[in-house]
Image (cartoon, one colour):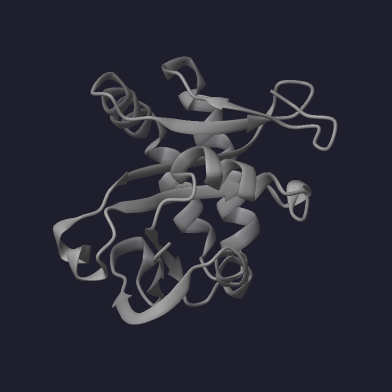
Length: 171
């Protein structure tokens, strides 16, 4: 539901929302990573759309949840989702990973990212992996209590050449 302070409504996503969320996510990737990835990267992601819709729908059917934000016209402008932490991240001592948080550039600075993050993880201790090459995202997470813990991972495949850093909010 939207609020007087925000024109965006945040709600739990359903299977019918998955195609629009994936379209928004790809647009957000273009905005955030357009200078870091070649056009072939975005084309490859677009070409996987049907597989991704199926994967996301299977996750929802198995009990996964994620959240979306819509503008007044019902257009998806953001999404967020969390999962239980992976065994490989157990050294952090937190049990939740903020796995996705994307907001279109038009909503930057509106508080929507925080609303989505709160919907997905509340105030729980959590971790997030963020591109080292994305200082804007790192600043957002720092502002909301996350700090790099020194763990990094060099990416491969379509993300080759980039590195993620792990940020942890201990609560």
